[in-house]
Image (cartoon, helix red, strand yellow):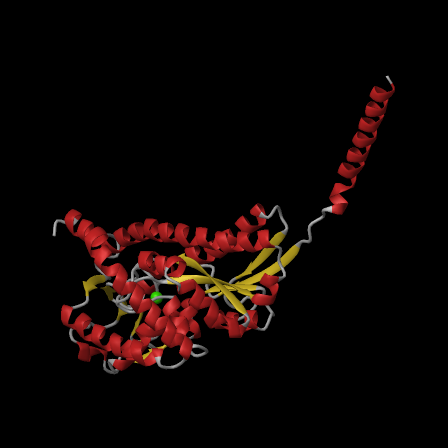
Length: 364
Ligand code: CA
């Protein structure tokens, strides 16, 4: 009897203690909340890229149970399109969404993390980041800037761009004023062109007013959103200069490191999710836009393939340019070597798998 009462009493005490703990729990385990700001390099008209940034913020908010809220600002709302890198590096912003090749002037290596002329396609680029050491090199390149990068939207293989006059030979690049970023831009410069880097939201005006003769952006969907089909007649393919374009969600390192590990993982893996989701969204929207260009805009727009000789000439120049740019810093050299080695290793498998299958279904 004595023993049982003791147990009951002990149990009662335990229950009471448990109940007290449960009531106190919200105060005891209250999680700190974080309010971040993300600026992008995109105008709101670019529904895929702008939407990507906003969906990212929404997913992070929902997955973190509201513990990490990110306010998104389009290009120019808080900082200019190309001011986001410095703002996050200096800690004015906790993060940004852009493309790493815009920062070539700060560190040459950044160009490889977006895409490489005549380089890997989106799948190859993806595999290089996660399984070929690409992301680790990207982190190393950004470390001196107090930034932590993660791959974001992949655009798929881009289009070659909009030209006011036809490109028949490599010599037609001489004196051509073109908006084209990254290593591809340096290839056009090597071919004799004058290269400018215009933010996405300003291309229409520059091309429409004849300030530039040609411009590339992304592909049919985005380009039409920017109105580029109203500015130049010739729309060239393929985007030899951007075959694997991938954007970036990049965090200020101090802000990122201050987060508990679960929130950091939410930021990381939501970026990976957006990387693949936007790749799909681009394809889905590009097929609709391409049909429009071939239908209702048929008389205004001529879709042309680059001549084979032009591609051969630009490819040769690209090899020289990539090598030159790789010589600009130790990390650029390391990145160039890693990228080339990985691409060379992937190619035989790609030829046997994807390329062989694509040729088969294309009837080639
Ligand atoms: Ca582009």
